[in-house]
Image 1 (tube, rainbow, N blue to C red):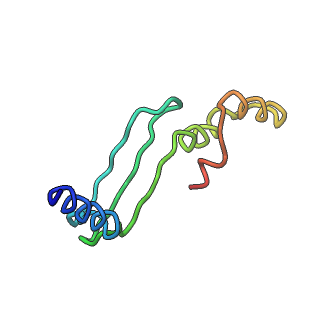
Image 2 (cartoon, rainbow, N blue to C red):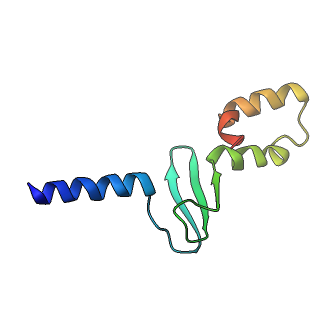
Length: 93
């Protein structure tokens, strides 16, 4: 019983204060269904990150639109965006 009570206190403290992340920066990427999904995290040593940047797969697709749309008409750009399956909500992060 005492062990479970100590574990409960430990979990509550961890939940309320969070993890202590060592200072520094890291970039981690995983393979998502539409491409690479990356997170860049900068920590100053506190329990909250100093900076967190999220790179969605659709961002690279939209960046390629300049080269894909060259020498095409404006009406064709709509079809190209449709084939890329760009979700503008994930690009706005």
